[in-house]
Amino acid sequence: MTVATMPDGPRHGIAARAGLWVWRNLFGTVANSLVTLAILWLLALAVPGVVRWLFVDALWAPATAEQCLQGAGACWAFLQAKYRLILFGPYPYDEQWRPALAMALFFAMVVATCFPRTFRLAGRMRLLLAVWLVAVGLIGWLLRGGGGLEPVEARLWGGLPLTLMLSVVGAFSAFWLAILLALGRRSAMPFVRLVSIGYIELIRGVPLIGLLFMAVVLFPLIVPPGVDVDKLARAQIAFVLFFAAYMAEAIRGGLQAIPAGQYEAAAALGLGYWRTMRLVVLPQALRIVIPALVNIFIGAFKDTSLVLIIAMFDLLGSANAAKSDSTWWGLYVEAYLFVATIYLVFCALMSAYSQRLERRLGAGRG
Image (cartoon, rainbow, N blue to C red; front, side):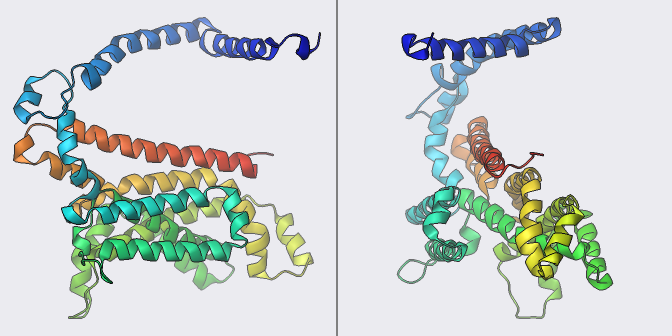
């Protein structure tokens, strides 16, 4: 019987496959059945209480801290009063439209870049890179000011824009440095190889907090008098140097996975070292190490919270500042829940896109 005579056939087939998957994976064995039932029991106990705390018993604006502390649910009035401080940190209140617009521009560029059609519309990678440089320049102008906008010192930047700047700019810059380090570690020239190995092992043996302290505390002591580098720039450089070492080892693993025949084939075609790496080896190696690189990117995004120890108000630091307000003393769960949700969303999006990229590029296939 054909599908045309049974319109519900495909739907029944999907339902049957879904039911078969549920049975095999959740109730296929006695152990799976017990674990599934235990998880369902725990969810039945926890979910109603969480829903009540989040929504049913929650207090919305207008509400005071005293009312929130006496209530049985979440105090979303606190977030309504402090969400701008959490998102933008100490940035001047009346000028916060500028970091908001800068983040919107940044998100638009990231979304456009993540879709292959953008590369085809751009025609060449150089054009897309030029658009990114223009966008970064606009973002810097919006945040720093000048040219018709009120200047805002970098020490007043904070919240989500600072987190994105440190993580994205740091990871992007570290990626290119990591490629050079990975190639240098496999170089036939002893000096280049030893320098690359020494750098990677030294940086990986030092915690990120140590590098941040060195960048902020020790750097002003060793430079000549009169030389002043912005603290944000120093922290950014520390992030680049730190994560480049970890990315270099991931990329080196991808380079080692490339068969020797690929190098020999490139040599037979008359390709030099750099053309071989750019056209033959690196595209294959980077495809292999996509999961490892994305894992480092996610770690870089979360590790921006460490700048709190050098008096920079990233997303987590701004949340700490918000909960320290004496008007809302005693309320902190909502702020941390809000920040945790932002971290979770960004990390989940990066993970989902990396899996999509792996499927599109065929990474992991034999």
